[in-house]
Structures are given as structure tokens and as C-alpha cells.
Image 1 (cartoon, rainbow, N blue to C red):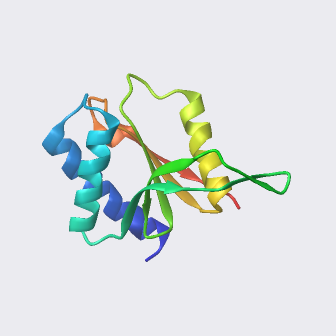
Image 2: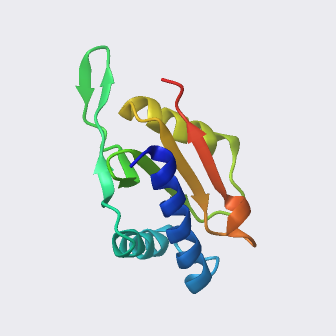
Image 3: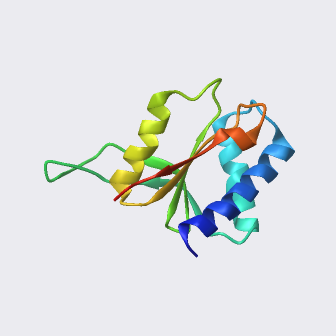
Length: 125
């Protein structure tokens, strides 16, 4: 499956979770529900994936984790905040760079419309 095909399926899973749970819960609740839904929808998904950070040739022990990794190709970063800030978008691009992956989805579940709260971020390797 390509990143775009995976992304399409992920969006469907996100819509199902948002429709069922609505807005305003903790990120951990959305993560658990989305993990369940992704697997139910036939996708390989792993949560809290540890990612090494290399600086000056040294592996830093910083405990960096991405929220959800789908099919080893797409990162999902979950938020439940009043409003996404510029740093959230930059953070996703940094995650993509550190993992050498092409596509990430930044999702804010604390919203009136989930359609406008899923942001695609592309790493131009």
C-alpha cells in the first residue's frame, strides 16, 4: 500500500472515532480508540514508537516517541487542544525528518469539524 492509500484508510478510521467519541477528551483516549479502529480496519498500527535521535554521531537517550505509526510508513500525531500552533506543524515535519518517512497526519480532536482538523505533512526527502 502506498502512503496515500494508507492515509485514506487512516482518515476513515479517524472519522469513525470522532463520530463516536466527539471532541474534548484526553489525547490518550483518542490514541486508544484510534489504535483499536485502525486494527479493526485492517491496518498494522503501533503506538508510542520509540525513535532514536542522533546528534553529532551520538544516539541521545531522550525517550522520543511518536503517537502512532501505521504500516511502518505514516506517522499520526494526535492532539486535543484548543488550537494547533505553528510549533505542532513544525514538530510533525521534524518527526518525519528524524524517521526518514514521507507522510504524517497531525490531528486535533478538540474541534467542531474533524474534516478541517486533519493536516497532511510531507517530508520532501
